Length: 211
Image 1 (cartoon, rainbow, N blue to C red):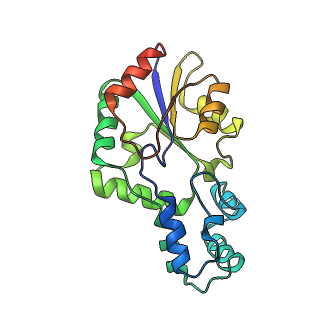
Image 2 (image 1 turned 90 degrees about the vertical axis):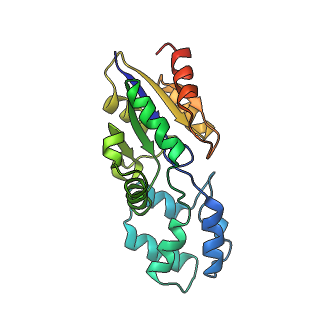
Image 3 (image 1 turned 90 degrees about the horizontal axis):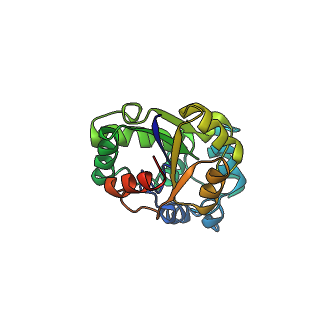
C-alpha cells in the first residue's frame, strides 16, 4: 500500500502574500482592489481564470475594464504576480526528506496559468529541479475546470493519485478545503498559512493516522 501526501500549493508549499496584490493594484489606481483577490475570497473574474473559463488575455482585459484602470498588460501581470513568494529552502528540504521516506507527493491547487508559470520558474531557478521531479501528480484547477472546496475535485484527485486501498494525507491552510477532503475519506493535516513545512511533523502526523 502506497503512502500519499497531497499538498495545497499556495500558503503550504509556496509562500503567498495577497496583501501585496491589493497594494500593487491600488498603486495602479484600482478602486477597492481587495474586491479582486484575498486569501479567503475573490472576484468572479478570478474564479473564471482559475477554472480555465477564460485565458490570460481575457483576464487582463476583464480586470482593466471591470475595475476601470489605465494600466498596461505587463503592469497588470506584475501586480497579479506580486502574490507569489516562492518555495523556501526549508520547505524544499522537507519535500526531499519526505520523498526519502517513501512518500508519494502530489499537489492539488486552485491556481491559474499565469501564477503557475511563475511558480514553476521560481521553483527551478531557486532549487535546480523541476516541480515534475518532486511531485508525482500536479492537479491544477484551471486544467480540470474544478476548484476546492468542491467535492468533485477531491474525488478526481483521489482517483488520480491513489489505488483503492491507499491512504492519502491532505495538507491545506483553509478549513473548508480540509472539510471537503475529509468527506472524501482523506486524512487531513491543517496548516497555518505560510508556516514552514517540517518533515518530522508531517511524518509524525502521517503515522498518527495509521499510514
